[in-house]
Length: 401
Image 1 (tube, rainbow, N blue to C red):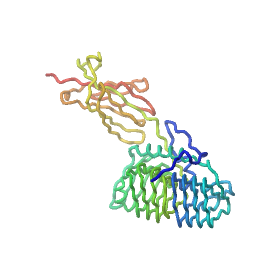
Image 2: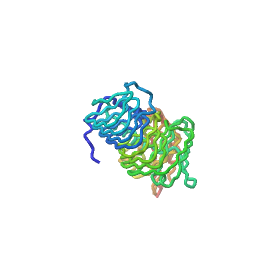
Image 3: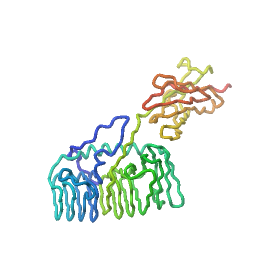
Image 4: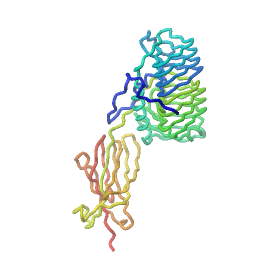
């Protein structure tokens, strides 16, 4: 797919710079029903809300904004960054704006006007922010569970604020319906990996969440095909060409491009997800030559490379973590991107150290001693948002000859 130079795109409604910890939302795109960075070719259907297209747009027999309040010409409901070709249709309660050429035939704007104007939306900034959001959410491991009941896919989450699920494309292909059950008022993110995703003839049933708080995140998709489906919730697929026919999306759709006759129904996004400043936990595996459970002269009691170190724990989303690292560069190990939680680190003694039961030596978190040393590990390491745990020592003692 050929891309245009995005430095030439419109620029006014820019998104704020993201800080860490970051609160992720759909930014300027949340004000639109359809938000595409490149091209749109849509026909014989409608969008109940606003539409923004970064490059070229073609509409035929199309309605836009019929469920919006009357702006009396104060709101732009169709914004096209480059060329607009619009035949037979109506923008009900707002304005049409295009950046370069406009070819309009039999188009009604009873409560607005049509004008040529650049610099209305900064699509490049929006794409940067929303691509980052998609990538960050896609990297998070799930805290919700799913299981099949015949051809029904049941998603169950128990966290009061944020429930994350990951569904492979083959899971979606095998399902006839999806049932989502979460605590009332919580936000739901359904991550779907894969460069090419197709969802067809799939029913959706929600309990505890509605379309305003549900996000489908196609964070790797370059091709996204939807047909014969009624999706509730916003779609975040910033790199995807969306082929959308014979169905409906109730929420905001953020895509690279879109073609088809699918219908977009209005449901303003209330997605707001805080990703904490990640914590980090570091330490050292060393040879406790004299067996005194302390590290003396580092030239004598040297770090040991190649030992397997396991991190276990539960974070603030209720996720049970089990991660593995191998000590390198003089015995160091490190676990990063940790949410607040309670963790332990344990060394798996290599073969000639397998009888060693030395106690792990607690380090410090933000300068304060945190943890409990037990055989081959340190337990009860409480990590807060953005905190650094350092100097956790895991000793090894050689077996006697």
